[in-house]
Image 1 (cartoon, rainbow over the protein chains, first blue to last red):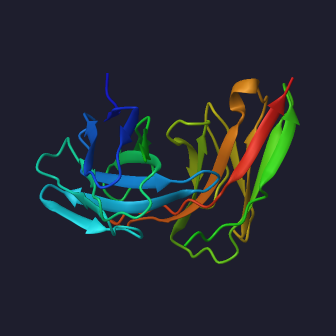
Image 2 (cartoon, rainbow over the protein chains, first blue to last red):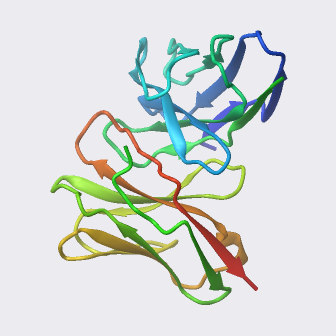
Length: 112
Length: 112
């Protein structure tokens, strides 16, 4: 059953700690994306990757880091430098050049 | 930056057609119109897309005006499960970038 998974669904951390969000896809997609969503807002792009070992900053990359060591995986680390990390984080994947993106269920991160 | 304008909210009676408008007056010739929806606390879901012609699939119909400056997403027989935020997005076809710009969308509420 093809799809994109994110874990965990809910995550709680103390301020000052780094945290890594998992994103895995078995759709054989080259492109993967990380978005952030705040209450009542649309999605904002954090990072995206078009190929293994390559990724680009999106609109709000400060305080975040990513890696793309495997085609199937695109983990996002929320570092202590991110000033307001509490948000809903969504991962997506797509075929290169296609506007149809497949989204995971999201991870809701709460930092106190 | 989102290139579309949508009403913030609409409602519709169950079983009736829901018609969601979108303005994209600055759309260029190689840009497609995509529609996604997001049920509360879930990842967005692709619905349909089109370039010039009207399109229909099992979920919805997309009507694009002749000048391509606006479009309407039609859910022919809305159900309670169609309650969601609907996003209209302009996407440049053929670009490997694959970026989607999500605005705030339209909150559609279907009532019994």
